[in-house]
Length: 187
Image (cartoon, rainbow, N blue to C red):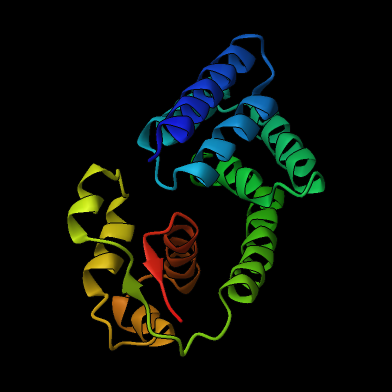
């Protein structure tokens, strides 16, 4: 990552922490999601999001925390930040509210269509951009690393998603993020 990007990422991470510290959880998630747009798979941002979400939930099974999270996610989705809304909702403990589960599915469907539209034809054949040694500094999540290991310069995107055994949405999301980060390319 270029130095300017690294500084921007560091600044966004800090701003997110400050927003979280003042109780503006939705803004913190927006800032950390912006980090993920610049540096897909940034573990620090993902850790902050998971930790902030866990800490923002009340203990003892009260449904008020889930309602607040769903409302924060709804606000994020209305500002067209569906990625952050999905991250927020999927970090809820399992057995979440029915409304949260429905919203997750709606967001996944919208994002799937957006990713597919942005990536184009899934018969395109991806290849690793640049030199393989440049990937060592990247902090890829295991699912992205697994998909990347299957890129052979001969398998089309759609087939890569199918043979990965991953959820189609998660596979497409990983491919989309790696393409946006300049890790994968095709003609």
